Image (cartoon, rainbow, N blue to C red):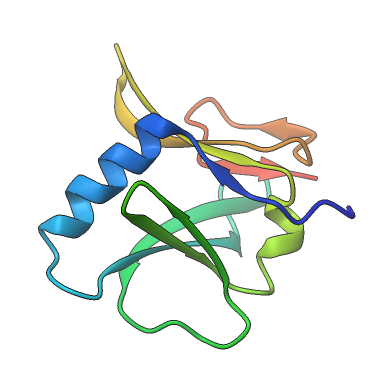
Amino acid sequence: MTDSNVSISERAARRIGEILKGEGDGAMLRISVEGGGCSGFQYKFDVDRAKTEDDLVIARDGAVVLVDSASVPFLAGSEVDFVDDLIGASFRVNNPNATASCGCGTSFSI
């Protein structure tokens, strides 16, 4: 896992920007990986105003996303996308490290 790049699609950046605009100045989206979910790990999305020294900071089109250093290896090479389909609108992480994922796309295993 040498590629620690995490990218944000144009659709996701636009949606993140809309969400953060409603949260006021200094708001950023934090994506983290936690144990749990039906596949072993799950993605967590939170609005945060505090950036730590070791956060990975991804900025695109006015959207700022933070990933904590413990979550970066799990997300290496991933793209965060925003999908609006028949089952609803949601952020989706296209993660090349995941060997299995659940139907809802919020949990995965490696």
